[in-house]
Image 1 (cartoon, helix red, strand yellow):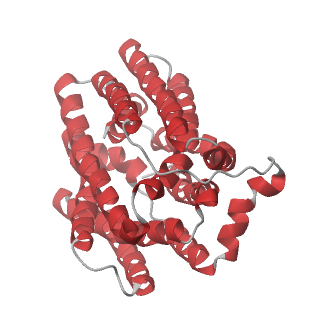
Image 2 (cartoon, helix red, strand yellow; image 1 turned 45 degrees about the vertical axis):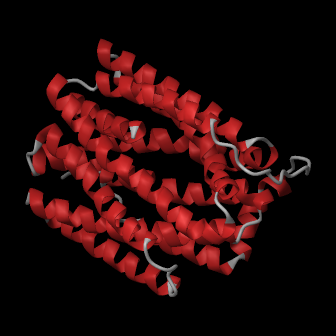
Length: 343
């Protein structure tokens, strides 16, 4: 919840100060660069050491970024320092992400894992609905992003406390020496498993020209004219769609035709993105983003279940790192590159 609140605050603060879509796009590059550089080593760490401890360390770094952003917002610090803070926080996210993804399989039994992924996605989407809306409310009331960063830092402390209370099953740790072959093992595994490769590739190309969330402050302020409150609801709409879809899937039997479901979800995602891009109505834009989130939720559930169930525990960190690079880069790089074009 805190991280998604912070995303809204950073976007609003930067666009309010610069009125530049390119400045918004650079936030994606600043955040994704550490993932590109550190994901594979971080995945190796997740397979060699206690994943829960790695997650705590990464979240501490991300929480420190929130404190830094709060100080920059309060003092109206230089823009380049905001990007530096995002890069620093991105290091923490890059470290914790593979371990966090692999940790779920140590908590949920195998026969309930697909359902566990669905409920995990639902819980995330609940936070994703409330977070952006709450951030928009706070910014609208206070006129500044500072309070949002303070709340996000507090949420990081809550997260660290709660993850400490989790007691996962024993972890199968690799004892191989750290070599180039070991670091590349996750990449080789993904390319050798045609089902996982197909799911990741399909998702990557589906979203390649569809990422739009980084540009939502532009739509909220200059196209739809709905201000900070409207921005919060625009950010929340995809999560509402994803949450309701995940709840529906959680109460049904596991999808029998996962491949067909994934293909239909990709087509629906593309149509919803086109409608949002053409819309000049706030209500229609909300509906399009709602549908976009619903279709994306199906893709996430299918891909995440396949990835974790077909991967041995001793390699889950490295394989999760490969998937993480695909998932994060498809959004951040697309948004930053598209922001170069005028409205």
